[in-house]
Figure 1 (tube, helix red, strand yellow):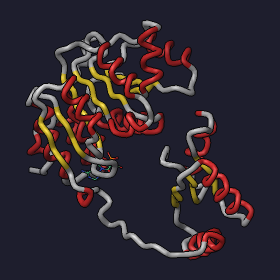
Figure 2 (cartoon, helix red, strand yellow; figure 1 turned 135 degrees about the horizontal axis):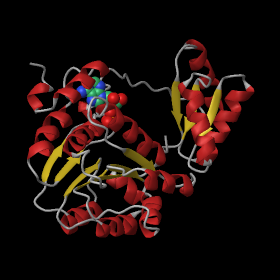
Figure 3 (cartoon, protein in one colour; figure 1 turned 120 degrees about the vertical axis):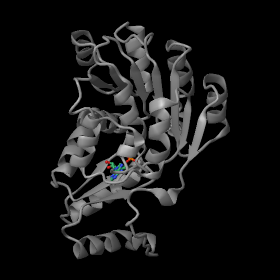
Length: 303
Ligand code: AMP
């Protein structure tokens, strides 16, 4: 029996996981999946990106939804469009061999009319959303959350950092009192504790160390250079690994633009990605990066 089978997953999901090459569950998956499938309790997962947390809540979510019931049954709230889209993509994969579960991602910066059309056309069993657009769509009566029985708050600390505190309160007030709330966060500041205290009941809490991330084989190296030599050092590194694709993280939008411009001048295939680009621009950069048209993405943590 594969170790995923021991977690109590259905055949259609096991088949997908095998196809995706997932052999063993990560720590957060091992600890969350059986609980979320059966325990009927609120859940706090202290885990960051790279621990496999999306599957940890995404798989149970897709297993719990009833495709025959024509209502929005689950809601995932995430801080950015990019994360929302990734979650949506993963959910669609896990549901590949099941009866069709409709999943829709809604986020700001894209046409609200298109999203309203999609909501009108089909019942969306699972909605993945960024906070502002979700509230907008609920206010326009395009989304009804009254039959939701599971809410996932992903990267909750990040949502608070981005100023979505009131939005989260509002969103939770739109959902029924009796539902499951699953909260994922890398850290547990007091404001998250307040959310837990106010909205969650007797939650199970699981904490995953950073060492448990999927990409254990990442090696960390650093070089100390003078600020003025940084560009040259980066260029030399890219010359040494011409087939490698990578992301350079910068603190500010301006830094990403400066670095990208510097690399472009030197004829490297680079582009910047930050929160002040329009959705269309962000999508275009991501598409070019995925297709290897861009070798290095210069990004703020929006990436
Ligand atoms: P996440 O932490 O959800 O962002 O996931 C990080 C990456 O790990 C994603 O690309 C997943 O597809 C991958 N992943 C998640 N769970 C597993 C697993 N059990 N085995 C191998 N890869 C996984």
